[in-house]
Length: 182
Image (tube, rainbow, N blue to C red; front, side, top):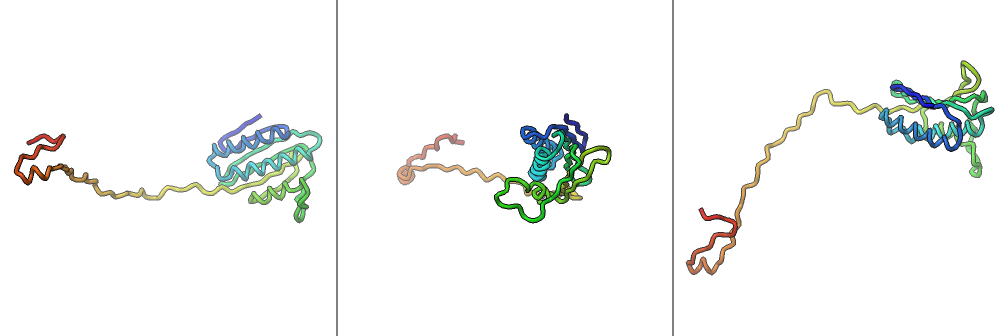
Protein backbone atom coordinates (compact mmCIF):
# COMPACT_ATOMS: atom_id res chain seq x y z
CA UNK A 1 0.00 0.00 0.00
CA UNK A 2 1.26 3.47 -0.91
CA UNK A 3 -0.02 6.72 0.52
CA UNK A 4 1.45 10.15 0.09
CA UNK A 5 0.77 13.80 0.67
CA UNK A 6 2.55 16.92 -0.43
CA UNK A 7 5.80 16.15 1.46
CA UNK A 8 5.22 12.71 2.99
CA UNK A 9 5.09 9.23 1.42
CA UNK A 10 4.42 5.90 3.14
CA UNK A 11 4.83 2.44 1.59
CA UNK A 12 3.95 -0.81 3.37
CA UNK A 13 5.63 -3.98 2.09
CA UNK A 14 7.22 -7.34 2.73
CA UNK A 15 11.01 -6.86 2.76
CA UNK A 16 11.71 -9.45 0.09
CA UNK A 17 14.51 -9.03 -2.45
CA UNK A 18 12.04 -8.63 -5.32
CA UNK A 19 10.23 -5.83 -3.47
CA UNK A 20 13.38 -3.94 -2.48
CA UNK A 21 14.08 -2.94 -6.10
CA UNK A 22 10.49 -1.80 -6.46
CA UNK A 23 10.75 0.39 -3.34
CA UNK A 24 14.00 1.86 -4.66
CA UNK A 25 12.14 2.87 -7.83
CA UNK A 26 9.25 4.33 -5.81
CA UNK A 27 11.68 6.39 -3.69
CA UNK A 28 13.43 7.62 -6.85
CA UNK A 29 10.14 8.60 -8.50
CA UNK A 30 8.96 10.41 -5.37
CA UNK A 31 12.19 12.40 -5.11
CA UNK A 32 11.96 13.35 -8.79
CA UNK A 33 8.39 14.52 -8.13
CA UNK A 34 9.65 16.67 -5.23
CA UNK A 35 12.49 17.91 -7.50
CA UNK A 36 15.15 16.41 -5.24
CA UNK A 37 17.04 14.67 -8.05
CA UNK A 38 20.50 15.19 -6.47
CA UNK A 39 19.43 13.03 -3.50
CA UNK A 40 18.10 10.07 -5.49
CA UNK A 41 21.23 7.90 -5.58
CA UNK A 42 22.03 8.30 -1.87
CA UNK A 43 18.41 7.82 -0.78
CA UNK A 44 17.97 4.74 -2.98
CA UNK A 45 21.20 3.22 -1.65
CA UNK A 46 20.27 3.96 1.96
CA UNK A 47 16.75 2.53 1.71
CA UNK A 48 18.13 -0.57 -0.04
CA UNK A 49 20.51 -1.20 2.84
CA UNK A 50 17.84 -0.69 5.51
CA UNK A 51 15.38 -2.99 3.73
CA UNK A 52 18.11 -5.61 3.24
CA UNK A 53 18.65 -5.54 7.00
CA UNK A 54 14.94 -6.12 7.60
CA UNK A 55 15.00 -9.02 5.15
CA UNK A 56 18.07 -10.55 6.75
CA UNK A 57 17.46 -9.91 10.46
CA UNK A 58 13.86 -8.98 11.31
CA UNK A 59 11.83 -11.55 13.24
CA UNK A 60 9.10 -12.80 13.30
CA UNK A 61 8.01 -11.44 9.90
CA UNK A 62 9.38 -9.27 7.13
CA UNK A 63 6.51 -6.78 7.05
CA UNK A 64 7.74 -3.21 7.25
CA UNK A 65 6.87 0.37 6.37
CA UNK A 66 9.03 2.87 4.51
CA UNK A 67 8.35 6.53 5.24
CA UNK A 68 9.84 9.36 3.22
CA UNK A 69 9.40 12.88 4.50
CA UNK A 70 10.70 16.19 3.18
CA UNK A 71 10.58 19.15 5.57
CA UNK A 72 12.60 22.31 5.96
CA UNK A 73 15.23 21.24 3.41
CA UNK A 74 15.79 17.83 4.99
CA UNK A 75 14.78 14.46 3.58
CA UNK A 76 14.24 11.71 6.16
CA UNK A 77 13.84 8.07 5.12
CA UNK A 78 12.61 5.69 7.84
CA UNK A 79 12.09 1.94 7.83
CA UNK A 80 9.79 0.58 10.53
CA UNK A 81 9.58 -3.14 11.33
CA UNK A 82 8.20 -5.32 14.13
CA UNK A 83 11.53 -6.68 15.40
CA UNK A 84 12.51 -4.85 18.63
CA UNK A 85 16.26 -5.53 18.26
CA UNK A 86 18.11 -2.33 17.38
CA UNK A 87 20.83 -2.55 14.72
CA UNK A 88 24.43 -2.02 15.75
CA UNK A 89 27.07 -0.34 13.62
CA UNK A 90 30.16 -2.54 13.56
CA UNK A 91 33.25 -0.87 14.95
CA UNK A 92 36.25 -0.79 12.64
CA UNK A 93 36.48 -2.00 9.08
CA UNK A 94 34.84 -5.19 7.87
CA UNK A 95 37.04 -8.05 6.72
CA UNK A 96 37.52 -7.81 2.95
CA UNK A 97 36.20 -11.37 2.50
CA UNK A 98 32.95 -10.80 4.42
CA UNK A 99 29.83 -10.58 2.27
CA UNK A 100 27.69 -8.73 4.83
CA UNK A 101 28.00 -6.34 7.74
CA UNK A 102 28.65 -3.11 5.86
CA UNK A 103 25.07 -1.85 5.44
CA UNK A 104 24.89 0.56 8.36
CA UNK A 105 28.41 1.84 7.64
CA UNK A 106 27.24 2.56 4.10
CA UNK A 107 24.11 4.34 5.39
CA UNK A 108 26.33 6.37 7.72
CA UNK A 109 28.66 7.26 4.82
CA UNK A 110 25.94 8.49 2.44
CA UNK A 111 23.78 10.38 4.95
CA UNK A 112 24.19 13.43 7.15
CA UNK A 113 22.64 11.60 10.12
CA UNK A 114 21.11 8.24 10.94
CA UNK A 115 19.75 6.45 13.96
CA UNK A 116 17.50 3.76 15.41
CA UNK A 117 14.89 3.84 18.15
CA UNK A 118 12.20 1.60 19.57
CA UNK A 119 8.66 2.21 18.36
CA UNK A 120 6.98 4.41 20.98
CA UNK A 121 3.52 2.93 20.39
CA UNK A 122 4.20 -0.78 20.00
CA UNK A 123 6.72 -3.50 19.28
CA UNK A 124 9.44 -2.96 16.78
CA UNK A 125 11.83 -0.26 15.80
CA UNK A 126 12.46 2.64 13.44
CA UNK A 127 15.77 2.93 11.60
CA UNK A 128 16.18 6.22 9.75
CA UNK A 129 18.65 8.42 7.89
CA UNK A 130 18.48 11.99 6.68
CA UNK A 131 19.89 13.96 3.78
CA UNK A 132 20.06 17.71 3.37
CA UNK A 133 18.73 19.07 0.12
CA UNK A 134 20.68 21.85 -1.54
CA UNK A 135 18.67 25.05 -1.60
CA UNK A 136 16.84 25.68 -4.84
CA UNK A 137 18.38 28.37 -7.02
CA UNK A 138 16.76 31.72 -6.38
CA UNK A 139 15.76 34.27 -8.98
CA UNK A 140 17.67 37.57 -8.95
CA UNK A 141 16.02 40.33 -6.91
CA UNK A 142 15.74 42.56 -9.98
CA UNK A 143 15.19 41.33 -13.50
CA UNK A 144 18.30 41.43 -15.61
CA UNK A 145 17.89 43.45 -18.80
CA UNK A 146 19.98 42.56 -21.75
CA UNK A 147 20.86 45.36 -24.11
CA UNK A 148 21.13 44.40 -27.69
CA UNK A 149 22.13 46.38 -30.71
CA UNK A 150 19.79 46.35 -33.67
CA UNK A 151 20.88 43.94 -36.33
CA UNK A 152 21.69 45.55 -39.65
CA UNK A 153 21.34 43.49 -42.73
CA UNK A 154 24.43 43.48 -44.89
CA UNK A 155 24.29 45.54 -48.07
CA UNK A 156 23.37 43.47 -51.10
CA UNK A 157 26.11 43.13 -53.61
CA UNK A 158 25.56 41.95 -57.12
CA UNK A 159 28.44 40.23 -58.79
CA UNK A 160 28.47 40.57 -62.53
CA UNK A 161 30.56 38.43 -64.79
CA UNK A 162 31.91 40.54 -67.62
CA UNK A 163 33.51 39.34 -70.81
CA UNK A 164 36.85 41.25 -70.96
CA UNK A 165 37.01 40.83 -74.76
CA UNK A 166 33.64 42.52 -75.22
CA UNK A 167 34.68 45.40 -72.95
CA UNK A 168 37.99 45.96 -74.71
CA UNK A 169 36.42 45.86 -78.18
CA UNK A 170 33.56 48.17 -77.24
CA UNK A 171 30.86 45.61 -77.85
CA UNK A 172 27.82 45.81 -75.65
CA UNK A 173 27.96 43.83 -72.47
CA UNK A 174 24.96 41.57 -71.96
CA UNK A 175 23.06 41.88 -68.71
CA UNK A 176 23.95 39.22 -66.19
CA UNK A 177 21.61 36.29 -65.87
CA UNK A 178 18.75 37.01 -63.45
CA UNK A 179 19.21 40.81 -63.56
CA UNK A 180 16.72 42.85 -65.54
CA UNK A 181 18.02 45.88 -67.32
CA UNK A 182 16.62 49.08 -65.80
